[in-house]
Amino acid sequence: MQTKILARARAERGWTFRGRPRGRYHSYSDTRLLEYLAQVSLRHEIDLNGFFDKFVEAWKNRKSTCNGLRIECRRKTRDSAIFLITANHKVVGQFPIPEYLLKETEPLKEFGYVIARAKSRLMKGRESSRPACLRIKDLKVGMKRVDLKARVTEISEPRLTFTRFHEYATFAKAVLLDETSTIRLTLWNERIKLVSVNDVIQIKNADVIVFRGERQLRMGKDGEFLVLDKNSTGTQGLQECQGSLANSTG
Image (cartoon, rainbow, N blue to C red; front, side, top):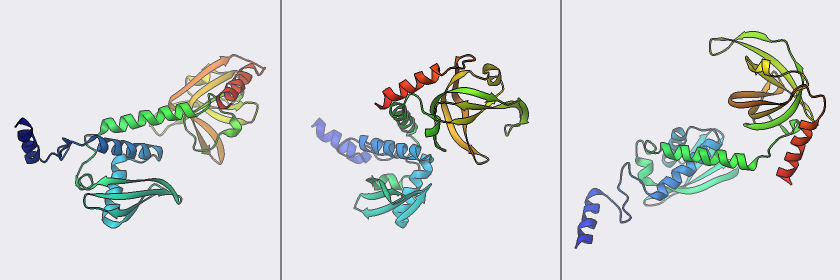
C-alpha cells in the first residue's frame, strides 16, 4: 500500500520511476553527461554555458560551431537527441542528450560543483601525464603549466613599464640555457632580485608564448620560481633534471 501511495505521489510531481524529479533535479546520468561536457569545454578552453547553448542551437538547426569544434545533431528520438563533436575532421565524442535538458532555460545553474570536479580531474590528469621536467627544445608555443630547470646565462637591465593593470612595474629579460637550447623569461619586480647570472633555477606552471616572433616563457599568478644553485658554472642541476626526465619517460 505504501509503495502505491509513493508511486502516485511521484507521478503527480512529475518524477520518474528512478526517482528523478523534473526541473532543477537531475539523475546520475545527467550529472555524468554534464561533467563530460565540462571536461571537453575545459580542454578546449570554452565557457561551459556557451558550449551547452551550441548543442541547443544544433538541436534546432542540425549544426553549430564553437571554438574550432563542430557540433552536429545526428538523430532525434522521442525523448533525446544524439550529437557528434568533431575537431579538424576527427571525432571528439558522440552521445545523447535528453530532450528535457535541451528545453530547460538554465540547465547548468545548479551544476557549479560539476565544473569544479571536472577541472580538478583534468588538472590531475595533466599532472600525472607530463614529465617532471621538460627540455627547452621540446617547448611548443601554446603549452601551459610546464616545468623546467635551466641555468641563467644573461639578465638585462631592469626597466620600468606601465602595465595593462594601470600600474607601474619593473621587468628584466633573462636568458635560460639547458643542454638542448635557450629561451627567454620575463622577470617581474621582486623576482629580479632573486636570481643572478649562472644560477640554476626551477620554474613550475609557466606558459610558452610567442612575443615579437620569438618563443618565450611567461609566469602567471600560479607560477613558481626557485633557485636551486647560486652562481653555478657547472651543470649538476641540469643533469639532475635530465635524470628525472629519463625516469619519467622510461
